[in-house]
Image (cartoon, rainbow, N blue to C red):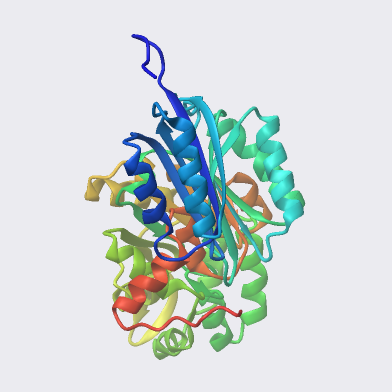
Length: 407
């Protein structure tokens, strides 16, 4: 068979499926090589030791003979095969390509159905599905085309909220693959709890300060005014209390894994906090974080005065810090990721290329690009296209043992 000039070449689509084992792919290509065909396209996935291999090849003169040879090879492999004739043109992926990442604990089939339905309603198509993690959360990455991510995001976010799962919609471009700056809030994000409440407990004002902090994080109070009023209650506290609080801090689960893994890939990190530099600077040094900006508690004669030195790092100050750190690294704002939980993080989340509300107050979840509501900070990496398998393998290479998932 010969193609007329300008005519699209005819092809055979060969789809092989069955139990995966070494030698399957080489066997099928050995059979194809004897027919002298050209490989036009190929895709292969393995799911729980079940393989699906699709190969698109040009049609040989004796295409029926090739079909018989492929079917014989499949029988020898104890696998199923389909051979179909078609056009050599691969369907062009439409404009508006996105990565849609779903995170569930668990991720139910009903939630997947609902999200797939909303994608179809938007006129978009799921081109590919990848599993990013199955433990301790289930994370799935959908490659979607045919709808602008900005249009798709609110539709899918609303459906995700109804289904009780987390979802992120990101434009599929080179930014997601490049080096980025991760800017994190500290209290109730990088660490569990609020430092100012822990300090206030030493001064005997724990419950009073906790109530004000919660209202400020919900956006009900001016952050600077509320911070100064809370810090005044710390007047007279010995500076040794700061050391005791630091020693009592517990990092969010997965925090060290997040920083360790992304540093291997060349990412940069910054802590931007409405808390206190006496704590955040030490955290940055401990974790290997590149930048840190927070408020400085005034100390005179070994005791806190109840005042702050210099300007307060407030909502606008956090966004300004993100822009300044990005500029220092020569990165665009699109190459930044911001993670926070409170209303004072909103400007920073909006300034970032990807703003993530992490176990955040409702006002923050509504305004952020995406929300993550599981207690594992390293889940953020699934939104960046890094799978749990990648993380475990990188740790194993350095002798770090990761607990195995349950069977």
